[in-house]
Amino acid sequence: QVQLVESGGGLVQAGGSLRLSCAASGRAFGSYTMGWFRQVPGKEREFVAAISWSAGTTNYVDSVKGRFTISRDNAKNTVYLQMNSLKPEDTAVYYCAARRGTATLSFRGTYDYWGQGTQVTVSS
Image (cartoon, rainbow, N blue to C red):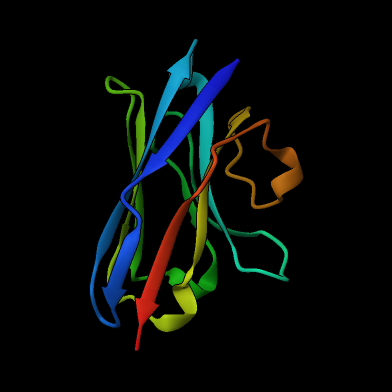
């Protein structure tokens, strides 16, 4: 069992930056692939980024490539999402997720554990 708690969301102007954190508790955090997803009201939860247990592999949705960076610190049981050059369309609730296995998959159904989410609002 893994518990995930996100933090770092907030209100930022377009062009600004935020860093989200996801603290994990439970066993064997270092063996999980970690992902970030986001959701706006009325839309499905969409994949943003994922990172393998060793941090050797990352995967991003095209719309955030070059602006967002996912990283992890297994010693601290924490995964991060550095978000730069934010746009109003990045506004969403951001969720941290964990999945067993090594593939940095984008399909949300493959993730086993989810956090409660943190709101990110980007003003124009």
